[in-house]
Length: 468
Image (cartoon, rainbow, N blue to C red; front, side, top):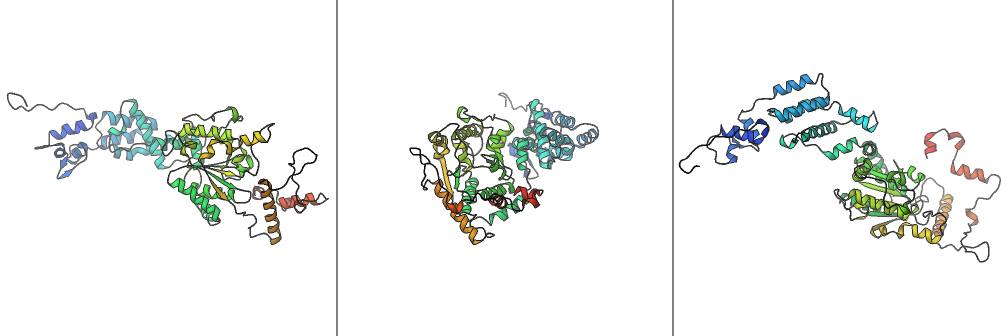
């Protein structure tokens, strides 16, 4: 209002690409008696969320038949990348009324080159992307073109916004490998394994699942001697997570342990642990790499036969995880292994880390309990020997297995007296009881082979037999 008299000023020009300003100006030339912005957006008693939707309700906007026909015609000769550039030009420089409807009508043509691109990046020609994955990749490409021109999909509601996390998971070869499991067959496997858990195994299973569901993370050590069903528990956990389409990394300290885990890998291979961890502070994993993203997306990590690895290797993995996970959700650089849910397993009565030319002191110093990591570890126990409770063995064999398992346990706990061959030497030789020794007679070696590989002559070409 001027000082001398009331004067109606002019409405400043707004370009069609200026978004809500353009639609506000259009409404101001049509709506009468408005006293607030809400009145301007009100059409037939309905308050619209944006000026554009109000303009559309008043019939002030034309339809997008022209842009729809242009994309349809161009799709017969243009590539997906060219169509995406064309679509972005329409959004930025033309009066597109409903960008979302235009996208829904032509998303298939706009993304027809992305599946081949992903197959080339990953090196797997059999990969087939789902519709939601293709749409997300297409929106990421469109957002990239708009960002190069100082614009964004946020300026064109109700266009959906892309998920950068989902896009990385689609193009990451390591992540796709871990998600490439049949969830239905994994669920069937889990249901058959779950009913076979004993009380100890069920308690450990529930504890780990509770830590996962509450996003608390944490470090657990499942302590159990040979035959207590650690491998069975690992298989159950792996089947559960993979049936829910979650990423679980199953690793072992040595090749045999890794082979017994579904989809298992050796720890040094999976985490790029140095072969000389005593002189290496971290693993060779860089931020932003496929392996780093795989670790970020993993829901659970199982490390079997952990006591066999030097504590320096665990400390290097811990420092690496803290660095990779310090800025991710539910994780923290101040917590052990970055707050990732980590489950170790093994038996310290068995083989400890091998220290070349090292004595007892050096071996104990290199073992896991000497690391500060163990201060944050919750120990879970498996005590029931499943081998002696099997139903398909005779009572005589069961008693033999029970006696042998108990003797092995006593040896591991240092309760069997040792002896020395020469006077003055350390008494660290264990005498094996007569009932556990196979006599060195003519057929005894063959009996040992027959017990370990029953009916080998007739089954050596059977892959399933060799696998077992």
